[in-house]
Amino acid sequence: MSNELENKVAFVSGGSRGIGAAIAKRLAADGARVAITYAKGADAAAEVVKTIEGAGGRAIAIQADATDPAAVKAAIDRAVALLGKLDILVNNAGTAIPKQFEEATLEELDRVIDINLRGVFITTQAALKHMNNGGRIITIGSCVGERMMTPGLVAYSATKGAIRMFTQGLSREVGDRGITVNNIQPGPIDTDLNPASGEWAVPQKANTALNRYGTVDDIAAMVGFVAGPGASYITGANLTVDGGTNA
Ligand code: NDP
Image (cartoon, rainbow, N blue to C red; front, side):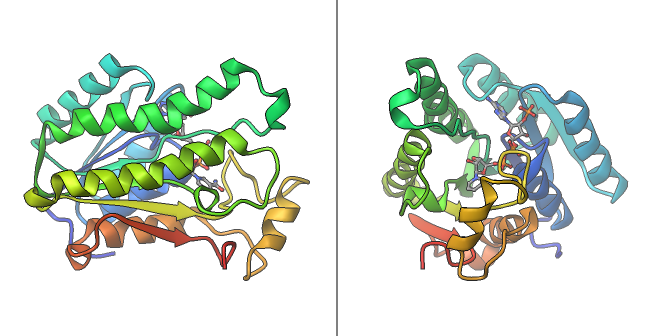
């Protein structure tokens, strides 16, 4: 925790639970004013805001499905209106629908693409209209966007691989404004989406070098670093925080 992000404003998509909630709390602890979005979990989002404000920070929660361009644009506009500006965007909202590829319906494949890729496009375009010079765009990809050992995640890993190139491509377009664009690639992190207990967790844990799941705070720490002044020369990078899964 520091005051490195004092007077900065951050927008975190999908900040009501899991990794996004930890990121929001971490950026707030480092001094940023934070807006979070959620799709359905109003109570969970309100709880994150309460925790941040209880610790002396400033936060707001806005309902905005990452797949709905009008809702996302309205959320960004509202965050800027209420918090004054925009310096840091964290594209965190994402989902997986684990299933053998041949059994996945087109609707399921579209859903994964819509949230994990199209949602990032929509949110980033809306955010860039307001983002100050020296801003930060951080997307939560996945270690499976680089290397794949688990069956059942074909569409998911394809979207996370696309996020790698989205990151590299966009870094070339906004660098002259001092805006950095980076992709943080978590390994198995204990959340509702990927609980550390149960059958699905066994091979994922075995694939790590550290023989354990990571925590949401492991990812939030990397986001805090990339959002801060010490990371101003890091851009177009894919930063893996996966306990050695891809080692
Ligand atoms: P969770 O399912 O635990 O939390 C997802 C968060 O995103 C919730 O706040 C949820 O809000 C929100 N969200 C989901 N869909 C939408 C949507 N359509 N629009 C807006 N918000 C939405 O997921 P994790 O915390 O585990 O994952 C966060 C990110 O990290 C994802 O991009 C995921 O792919 C990535 N990741 C996770 C790993 C893991 O092992 N957990 C590993 C590698 C990457 P609500 O409750 O309102 O729906």
